[in-house]
Length: 359
Image 1 (cartoon, rainbow, N blue to C red):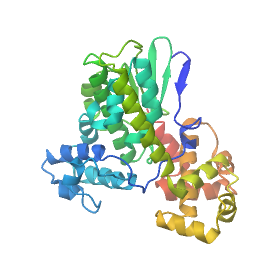
Image 2 (image 1 turned 90 degrees about the horizontal axis):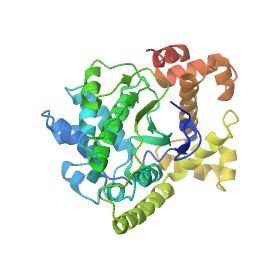
Image 3 (image 1 turned 30 degrees about the vertical axis):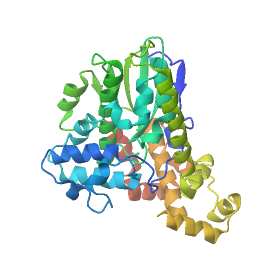
């Protein structure tokens, strides 16, 4: 593809350097969980079984006042993988995500003046809906490319990562068809994992070339900058204003863990101590520890998470050796990095790199 002349980024220059939304805060609509629950219910799996230990009930999923966290979404994904008799459940559940399921975000897309405005809006406000994946939109003269990364599941050899990508990919197609028209189609899909046993489902749903074992995930489609059929400036202005308020809320409620992630990501390989971070945040170390405990995490966990995400990106997208990556992540030698990576993923760095680059 030609070099893209326009890019919209949600944060940072690289997915590994983006600030993650809170894993614990309940601030998102339950629409994605509702889609998964409905899909499994059609397979004969009772909602209560899928929702067990999440603190949610089936009636709550239809209430506009219900808010969920990424922790609850993570539980639902893992339960769906375990309980479903259909390995393609994420693809099917994503097909339930019609544009109106996204509330004001969806109505803002539908009422945008042009497809350019809709793409700009989607890139800026996607996090208000608690998405499975962040995305970046790039364009050239003829093509739009949408690259996407699972927010909390970075390991492409993990089934939860694949579930998140499949759901997002299918949901994007469904919602865009609603907005643009049934003629809309992807021209190509690239994925960062090996072909699953049900790869034929991809062909049936997306009806375009599918490339597995790539360095990242994205889909492409023909560029259309024309007028949106349902454009309405008053509706769009109202919906955009509400989404701006929601985005402010999401950004405000990231918690102290999000602040620490940002500090750690800003200084890869030179990670400050908890005491140094506490001083930067103008807090006592003991108070900082208590706040992290209240959010269900610790400085040690956050440091491991940041190192893991960066290591995965380096192994997937660069030719750096284990020694070079170890140095970038602040390890004294490659052996310590190797032991840590096995603890995180269950694979050695070399095995992981081979698996993610397999055709």
